[in-house]
Image (cartoon, rainbow, N blue to C red; front, side, top):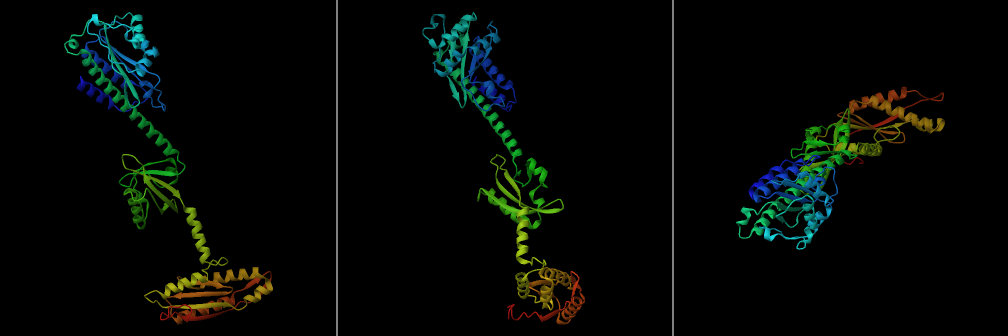
Length: 460
């Protein structure tokens, strides 16, 4: 009996969580009761469970153990199974009595040992039920209440015929029946609790999936091979990521070590959460994203990836860096940036030939005095544009302050640098600057020197 019951319970349980119906649970209970009936040769067997039907509903969040349900199996009994089951379900006082009072097994092996209601007051509602249904109960056996997890089970049998010969041949029939009912009740309760937990976990997984999809930031699940196995709606609509794609396919090769180190830190448990910021091409533009990783806490050992677009922060940082290294009026590198470029050149071990020049506008103060500072600002912008046009590609022009400009001509000797300087002076002399009808003559003076790598100080 024990092996058969275990195989039955295992078979029914492995069918998986119930989706909106109780077919598998009812099958489990009815088949188990049929085995009990056959083993004890009793007329009927019944089981009271703590709300097994609602317990396995997929939309049930709160378990109400104050209500019980009854399932019964009838063998040779002429009584209608549906009538008897319905009567037991309606008889709340009997269910409550059985669940909240631990009763020893009651079993009679002969008509002379029949019990009376006075001797077992807890069974009065049940005996009244049998009387109302015109059932002459010769034998009745009940297991104590079995509590496994959130499931309670009481298993019972009744006989309307003479004593069971298979049971009577035992020295202690009561103990034999009690062990059989207790073992079966325990297996039933354990199986129902396992199914309940399976459904609860399935519900939690569905809730997690729904919450995952509703998160306001882009998220994805990453497997052990660093492939995307799941992504939410925000990720699908806003990022160039698809399911099945490797994260490393999104990055430039130079950024692979950074991502690999970040994944290693989380997977090895060095930190619970780690992040890195990498550039991705989203359409025609490069966007910067912050990748934050943590364990997804599932059996697949996946990682939860949270993605934040930090492009605006990088844009502001670049803008701040630009303003700190460039002149606001002309957009040219400022004095600080020019000095840094010159220092880098002096530290170059190859010592490429280069020349440096300083340019000063001769009539700039006259323009400011006669036409105002707005005219002077416009003149500086025009001169900056002309200088960038007159220098070779790769040469550098910077505004050092006021009307002073610095020129750095790379890979140039003094002769070619002088030719460039003469061309600049001639072009500026021919440049016409007119402000509100007033024409100003423009000229410039240029001082030049060859870059000397012997002395690394830019201010000798």
